[in-house]
Length: 124
Image 1 (cartoon, rainbow, N blue to C red):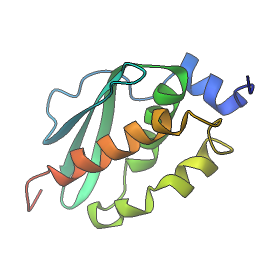
Image 2: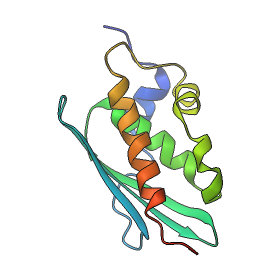
Image 3: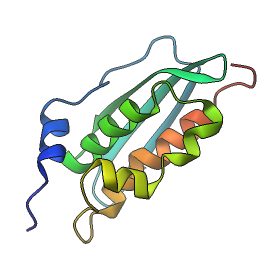
Image 4: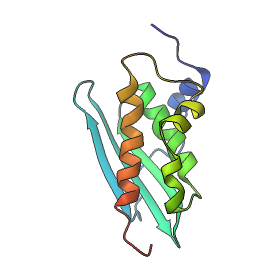
């Protein structure tokens, strides 16, 4: 088994932005039925920018680390710039691509974040 990179371990042990966001105006749920990962990403957007982003999850280390890094990266971004949070950005933030066979664990928070952002009402 490939050892996890230090950034993955750090974000798994001390995830940033973990917990519900009571005043969210965008939200999405995601699940990976093959491994059992479940995640919810919530965002608060105001004046066209992400003010806050948080997640809750019952998931593996890679999924939680990915969600932690992504919600950190999304904060402060303009809504129309969040497409830059993609697989390449995430691999760089996690200091490398996930181990073979674990790419869905990393992709789940990415997809869920983008769906949460897409659910933000126009004009927010």
